Length: 267
Image (cartoon, rainbow, N blue to C red):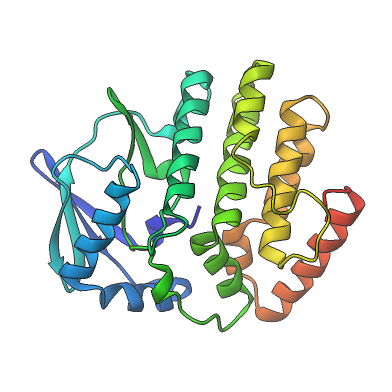
């Protein structure tokens, strides 16, 4: 969800892949600067925390260098999870639920994972997180300097927002695949959604955005909302689009989304 393609470059080395933290994108400068100071010891501690929480990492994963921060692991040949929504929706839902379990297990720790569905592959023994750069370490969370930083940091570090974003993206992927999901599978997909904001509350704008996204997408999966409206709302709340706006335009977008959420009764 946070678009790690902006942060990491990779190259093949035989049966291995080497991924290098790339901080050239200005939107990620604060995050990348913090990550570059993690070092080998800090990166290994981060990976150990992920493993202890049950996160399945690629075979042979190791830290290649500290500056620039780089990792090496065996190439994972399985399909990208995002692409599997239309191939095997049942397995797709099971994988998303497993990832949600990792997110909850990591909540009390000093580690988070980027739950962009493109960051996971399906292997014979389950779903694998194939992107661990930049390391998302809450204690190194930089102070936001603008509205995009506020949105981006919430998506990286706030467990409630991460879960809402994960399930919302998964539901939209299923809508795009035009598959018929059994009622039980829809219920299973909705179950990891946090209940902290189940009732109307005064929430931050990132929390409001992603709670509205997941609510609308799950409604559409149940046949209670039009898929076109889901896609329109996701476009309106696009993180990449928000990044490319000026700060004045971002403030306008926050107000616009807030009004849309009220009109759609999504709070």
